[in-house]
Amino acid sequence: MSGTVLEHQSVQDYLHDLNLALRGMPYRKAYALREQIITHLDEALPPDADDEEIAEVLRSLGSPADVAAEAVAALAGPVADVRGGTWLW
Amino acid sequence: MAGEGGLTELRRGVLGPCVLALLEIRPRFGLELVRDLAAADGLLTSDGTVYPLLNRLRDAGLVTSQWQDNEGERARRYYSITEAGTQTLKEFRADWDRFAVTVGSVLNHTAAGSGPAAEGRPQ
Image 1: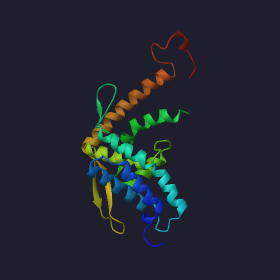
Image 2: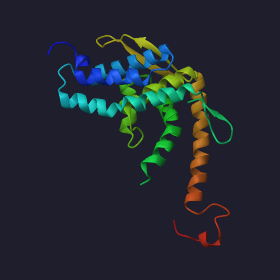
Image 3: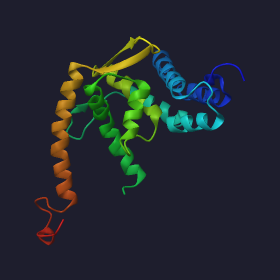
Image 4: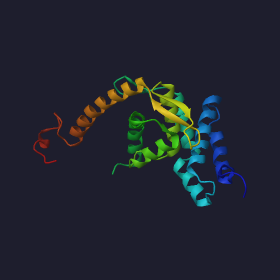
């Protein structure tokens, strides 16, 4: 198989599912997150990674739904603590 | 050990400050930060959720990022703590210390108002 590990089918499937889960998010934020995930995969996987290594890294990443859910939750604004103050994350 | 649901909420509350605390030591790139968090047992369930958190911290002005092209290495986006991030972390540390003491005393029945049956209970 030629090309980078990012072209591996399971990676492509993951990124496709991530795109779907990020639908409705502002484009720039979705794009930035997608780029971060791609960079993460590119860094975490050696060029000759096998199916098992790829599956393990994708598993550690968490499901596209979970990752997207965190991004969507962040859009809701700062988290308020019970005293009425505001945590900025 | 606490159920997974309870831990999830606890993690959500502390992960931001933990990221800030790591960046306080030195700037890091994404995968590096993920690995350092994952090394702290039980803190991270899903590597990918670190990135939305980093973005949230950046939007809040607590973290900044820039590309760095270190010799002999690939260009990477490094995340750094800001002055506001340092201040927020300092406040959180104080809050956390007080909170941990309070919660601990309630959990261990040593808080005032725990009731007569709690007095003298060995810990």
